[in-house]
Length: 324
Image (cartoon, rainbow, N blue to C red; front, side, top):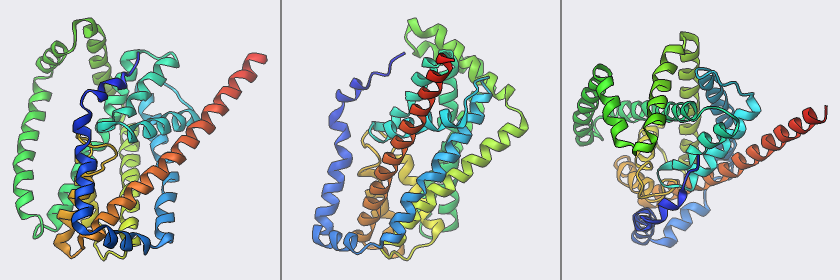
């Protein structure tokens, strides 16, 4: 199975919306003023944010390892960390973070079934969405005075989503048929098998594994949001941690849209609109977004080095086994 990244070239104009938004925001705020805020950022906070990459890798690798056990796939910590790190690197350079699907290819190359590889990746991606949604929602609810209009829209959307999810659960067989029909005919068998693997994972996932997965997920996002908060602290922004987490959650959800890569543009707009309500200047908001991007790219370097380190170690072990 191959992931054809050339598809992104067809809609390249859409991907420019994010970068163009950044340029416009900087020009309106004043490039010199923005640079002044960035240049005065405290390096100790930035260094601490970059260092958060280490626990992020560990937490994600552990969760990925536990999740794969539900599919009878056993990976060592090194393999899990290597695979997940490469997924993080490619997700940083692809619209909608679709590069993370490289884990499907890596699992198939290790001899695991296509259905299990696809199903495990779908569940893995779905695990993060509720945490980000809940963080954004409860953060906004906590500061309802600042998010009154947004909460009305979100509450309506939430009711619709719950209705859809209830329908999916109660009419899952009908949903399966519709979903499979949307897939090209030559992939129908694989789609059916992947569907059964997704459902089977829930049946095989015991209480202990489920609890562990939920725990590691919340710990991961706790570290992720705190790293973003450190970026805000670096530019001297006086902001509540919960409020910053809510803003970051909204920006992360919008980063899934295929109009941006690594959240460029969408994150800046969200920060400017929401942080201005608590007295943060436009220049500070842009600086925070820029630092978040810089930390993210720095983390990608750490992720790639992790992948290279563990991948080479795995290759060396195979050579030793073959020689024996």
